[in-house]
Image (tube, rainbow, N blue to C red; front, side, top):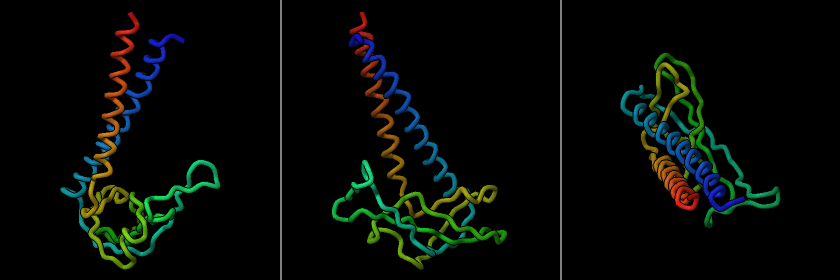
Length: 155
């Protein structure tokens, strides 16, 4: 396989993958912002924590996040819509036990009345999603570099 063919393949892998990741993360950021601006407000409470064990490659390996250990927790929040529909929803982000919302914590939930399953916590930051946008953008730039190299070396 020629070097220019390899560069074309890398460009065709990195560029769309990066664009897809960046676009999906940006869509989530816009959804969060819209919910915070226009969504209905409800009071929720953390009713349980769903533990998740982080596992690495194979079943015998685990991932250790610094000194926090290998189990992270998703807070599950119970709340009700304005029309009284009971909801129980899990946050998108899991954290170590000492950094997650404790049981019984009262939180504000912002939701779309037409689709209450679309909700967010205004106190949550979109930092993770912005990092995904940046990572996707980096992949697009890497793909563009491979494309430029393929065009130069393909001659």
